[in-house]
Image: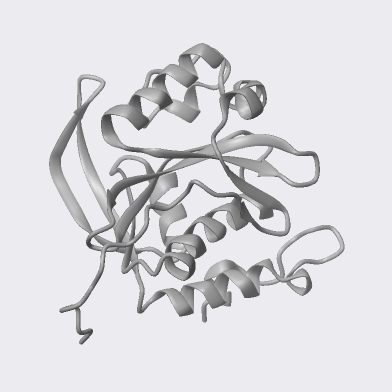
Length: 223
């Protein structure tokens, strides 16, 4: 059991650029990232990206910036842009949320991947880099993932990324006039070394063939 009698408040995550091989996670800057994000995740042809978000499908950059700025102001979200290194375009975003630095705990959420980012090596590396920052740079104890219980894709992603299922908060929220049962997942600091090793083994060049297909799954790389 850890001795927490002298545990000190941690710094907030984000605020700096986090670098991987194929992706960078940058503090969201509308002048710098806005046009790319609007092209990647906004518009009437992408309603599925917003189905389980607290927002209705977002049409354009002004609506996107207003929604995210509201989240930052009212709830303390720290939004980050996911920039693909190969072409320097912001193709998605994610936020550090439910910030409790006095307990060494935060959540990754409001994750939106544009179609070009979905199911790619860069998308997985983005989640790795954000987790690595929390545990290795800031020495947090807990990293959370939450989603609507009906969001099967998000639950699969949480488990794939190494989060452990913790349970269901029934009738947790009312979102868009409907009930939300919330599924909770987490990674703890004691689990992180194994999760990290799995990410690094999966992301290694020798885990991919000449066509870019994985040789071993992320779950298999965690052993």
